[in-house]
Length: 112
Ligand SMILES: [Zn+2]
Figure 1 (cartoon, protein in one colour):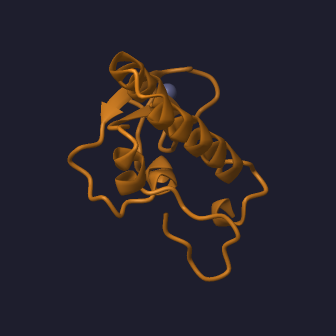
Figure 2: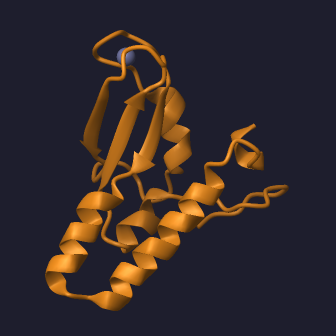
Figure 3: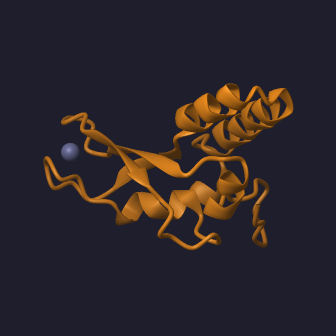
């Protein structure tokens, strides 16, 4: 994960979540009214792309709102891991998910 000057929590980048088997993103409309969401494959984006940087680049195809909540789709990655029966990889995903949740707190410096 990349850590910029002045940041206390490292940015989660696509290359990092790909390293844990996560290739898709969950995108939720930022309007707070239409509740539209979608799953998006992120294979075409560069590894060094911070996941949170995608939020302001999304546009809802239902209401036209610019801005969305973008998160890794850990559900699909967990299912693939469970099928392989790889306990350690599953534990790493849970730890990474906890880090992701901590980075998404409103008081995180990189969100300001
Ligand atoms: Zn919308």
